Amino acid sequence: MAHEHHHHEHHHDEDSPRERLVRIAAATLLLVGAVLVERHTDWAAWQYLLLYLVPYLIVGWDTLKEAAEALAHGEALDENFLMSVATLGALAIGFLPGAETQFPEAVFVMLFFQVGELFEGIAEGRSRRSVAHLMDIRPDTAQVERDGAVLTVAPESVAVGEVILVRPGEKVPMDGTVLEGNSSLDTVALTGESLPRSVAPGDEVLSGCVNLSGVLRVRTTKAFGESTASRILELVEHAAENKSHSEHFITRFARIYTPIVVGLAVLLAVLPPLLTGAWATWIYRALMFLVVSCPCALVISVPLTFFGGIGGASRQGILVKGSAFLDTLSRVRTVVFDKTGTLTEGVFAVTAVHPEKLDGYELLHLAAHVERHSTHPIAQALLHAYPDEQDGCSVSDIREYAGKGLTATVEGRTVAVGNDKLMEELGAAWHPCHHSGTIVHVAVDGVYAGHIVISDRVKEDAARAVSELHAAGIGQVVMLTGDQQTVADAVAAPLQLDAWHAGLLPADKVARVEALLPQGTLAFVGDGINDAPVLARADLGIAMGALGSDAAIEAADVVLMDDKPSKVALAVRIARRTLRIARENLWFAVGVKLLVLILAAFGVATLWMAVFADVGVTVLAVLNAMRALH
Image (tube, rainbow, N blue to C red; front, side, top):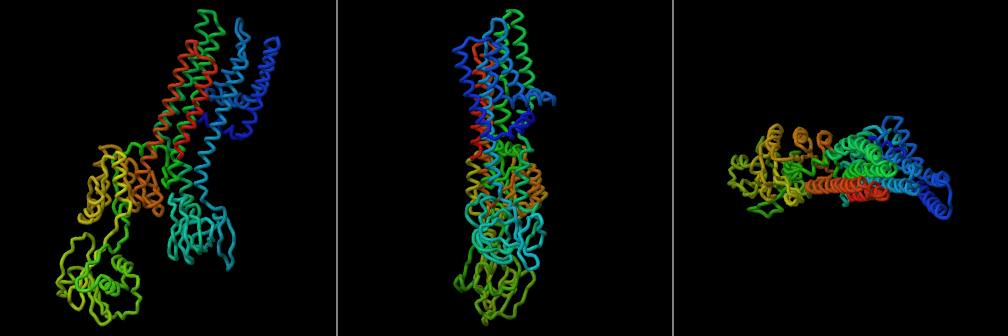
């Protein structure tokens, strides 16, 4: 049934909502004219039929044509077929002995059906536009430097390693590294983040961002088809392929339900008249039964709700790879976070300075000078904390002690920077620190001068992420890390996690996740590089800020476009709301239809009621589905 619906939708794309509106208006005027003529004349039934056929064909020709085409393809039982049979039957019923003509009703049923189609077309167009607008992130041209000139070319023709120019106001056409220029980038289309991001030479830029201020020269690192914007577009376009349980149910339901209803309508038209002889009455009831039974409201509104939910999530920088994953996301009961790069920044930084013989600034100053030529992450953290190390101080006699640290002469003083083993070797009386992280001890001329604490910073919104997940009714929030226990404790305790496990290899993480799986639907959140096996093993894999990591994008079911763990709670809320709207539509449509079907079988309902139970319910369900977009 679902594919039959798409079959009919495809045809209707040929006429725009405006054209359909014109046809509806023309048919309405002609219908009013026909009713007035009927009131004031005394013609034969066939003459009135010809009069009413004009508005009927103006508004219903498309539907009749598609019903005939579907019949020819062996796909008879779609809504066009049901509407055609019901309205043609209503036109013919007036020629049965003792029956009243139903010409105005027949035209009105078709008219109202077209009004429903108009609403559906507008709603679907709007939800598609919302995703298309969000995804309008790939530029049509790129400015590339070739043979000393700047050429405007199609982005597909730019090779990896070529240099492109991105001027203010232009979209970045492909991923690359900035060679020259400083600017701010608007990343809202990719991450949902409204704050512009500053870039300078050496920084990476992603396709789809808008350059706001300066001209950038960028060396491309990925081909156009492989770059971030293209990957996102691909993910969103394929999202429709992974159907949710609800959508599968609707498709199966429609396939079984429609033939049963048509069979019942035939029985209703034939069996009672054989006993009572009232053919006209029972055929009219059977036609009503057919109109009501049309499952448009379900077939249209449930997929539209999920499409809206996926569009609304991607607006917030949350890419869901299909409505099946939206379904899973709404049922999550356990969330497991990786630590480094997910709950923490994944970058070493100076988090505390504890001086003893000097002030804190001087301690950092001396340590940064000793470490100035080292590429070790600890050294980089010290240099980052003390950016003025090119201040002209003389540094000489740098000596490295393997696995322990360095010594150097700075402005005539011998400065040692390293771990406790180096301090012991030099005879400096060091003492431990109560902070967790890497402790860098400093001695000046053999006397202990204090220490600096370097650790991975917890992300600003990590605590908010955990509290929002708890507030959303998530039973367990767990952290897994390969780091040592003291580091894990220092991160997990302030965040109020329910459990955490340290010292794990990737295989151990998979085992821990498998142990938690029986406790309910489990989502694993990781930053990607080494988390691919766990992302694939969890019920739902969520990749964090993983635009750099192809392995994560492939393995994850949901991709968060920025580095905010709090987006996980937002994703759960969006998924639950989408499912709630889909369920509302399901129960509302089924409830109204059942009620009118029962009334129709007992002869209480009219054809007008039947029209509301079909088209009216569809319009209301579609309008309700639109809420999922926001």
